[in-house]
Length: 206
Length: 206
Image (tube, rainbow over all chains, first blue to last red; front, side, top):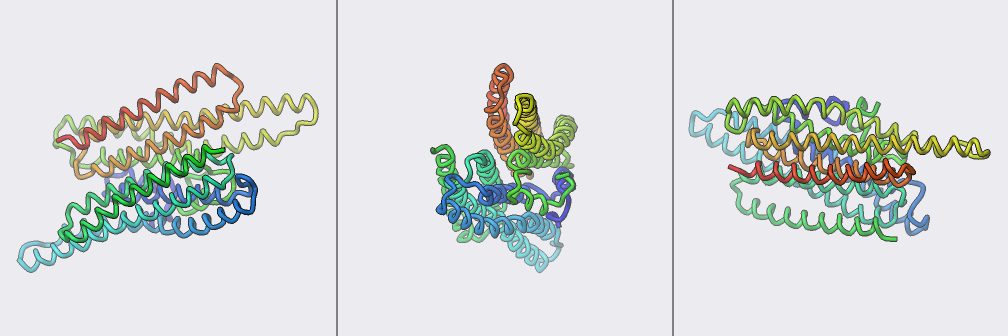
């Protein structure tokens, strides 16, 4: 599993010419790092005003971020596995009509998974960015640069995931599914921008 | 060393309430991932036009990216070490005038290192983004989403590093140094934006 390799080994694996791990797994990792940094700030003993309101808002954010982060870590491996399935499907035999038909079905199934996994990363990045509002508004001011880094990583992770959604969606023949996904990614990108902007404003507020 | 921990352990370490690793190390890691993805695309057997010109441009980019990536991986640990030194300096005794003076000098030295390390990450991110132009212009079109992800990670890594530069620079009393750093970070941010825009245009060009 990629998540069980050392950081140096994983970076070497990204740099190798092997097709996986690639940009989809890197995007999941970037968002996992962003969620982890938000959780760090939510867990600090100091809060913005050291009030009970701060502590309860940060405890709720921290609780939500644990699950989001764990699912993002799972997606590092899931994205590479999904892409490997796409490659394997394209390599299926295509000599007879039966083989052609089976190969086509396998490609469509694999592309669907390879779309669903980064779509999940984009959703999870959105979830984490919603928690960034609470962390920016209630977290210790001394950690504002950590919150800023987290927002940047979550937005880069989401954008990277959406690049992967779009690439795979291009090969999917189910028009209703493709249309639903396109609507959702527009919504996710808009929500992420709104959460990030609101969080940045809170970080700067006195 | 952070780079020798597993990915899962490092993400857990970012999420813990310990002050390090924090946003500076996460920024170095994000840029290292971006440089690694660019190197993957530069190493693929397929290139944009499968021409000798492509192969020689990509070989040069790959060579430059190896060094950049290795220095970014070193910065993951160097940033946390630098921040630990800042914390240690603030904790020095300050009962006598001699202690106060020694503590003040130690804080200034530590803040300088804690500024220089993320400034180095911002420079290295800029170097990698310059190579992104070659990779976007000469690399295999099938890997364009990987190049897009890499650009996003390098920009997030650079912006995160610059947030850390600014925070630490605020405590530095050497006005000439602070002024030189402020000029450089404005230049680095502008260069990174220009490289990213040029690369995105090349990715979309036919």
